Structures are given as structure tokens and as C-alpha cells.
Image (cartoon, rainbow, N blue to C red; front, side, top):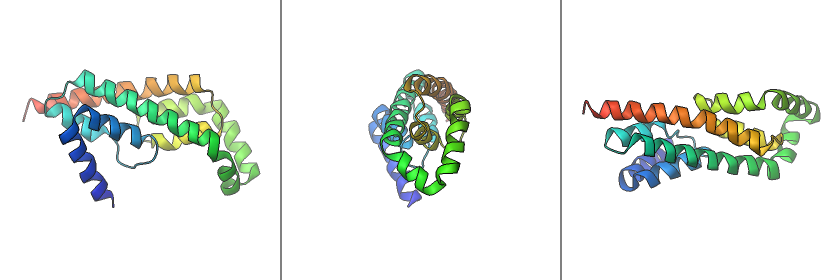
Length: 157
């Protein structure tokens, strides 16, 4: 299953360039398991502009994250309470209220699954303004570094 998703994502970037990077970055922030990083780096190694590729990926990822946040806000609490129990849900909510901005920022900068934190941000009703700011601050630098690394690699191809 993951192999077919990877093939789909690779062909998307090869055929559609920036639009492919947008779609991969957007969907990865909501549900799909393949991170956009290899496609950003691959695209810039093959000639896409690093600043444009990282901007497209960043905007798409934050929009996808906002979609996951909204879905978590609308649909997630009853499911989370059922899975975690009321007591653990309240503990999780207190933890996220205290460290939520840091969790989103850290997930944006690292391989921590960003989509999971986006859903939790919605489930635990993190304010959108804080969520968006932390998402932009995490995703843009990460994707910019990945894009320029791909561009540098492209010089050796």
C-alpha cells in the first residue's frame, strides 16, 4: 500500500511540478503518511526553484493542517473521549493547552507526524491564530532547508 502511494506521489511531482508538491504537502498534513520532503528535494534537484517549491509546500502544508485542525474541532472530541476516557482526555487537554504551540512548532520542524498534532490542536480547541503562527514558523524553515539541499544535490547530478 505504501509503495503504491509513493509511486503515486513521485509521478505527481514529475508530471505536475509545483502543483504535485502542493497536493502532497496538503494531503500529508491531513491523512496520508508520505512526507513531502523527498519530493521537494527531488523537485529542486531536478530544476524547480527552491524558494517557490518551499513556499508552495509550506502554504499547502499549513492549509492542510488547518483542515485537519478544523476536522478535529468538528469531529474529534467525541471520538477522543471515547478512546481516551474522560479523565485522560482532560489531562491531554490541559497538556495541550500548556504546550500546544510548542507541539505544533516542533512537529512542523521535525519528522514528528504533523497531521497528528494538527488533529489534536483541533480536538483540544487550540486557537487558530496560535495554530497558524506555529505552523508557519515550523513548516517554512523546514521546507526551505529541504528545498535548498535538493538544489545543492542537483548541482552534482
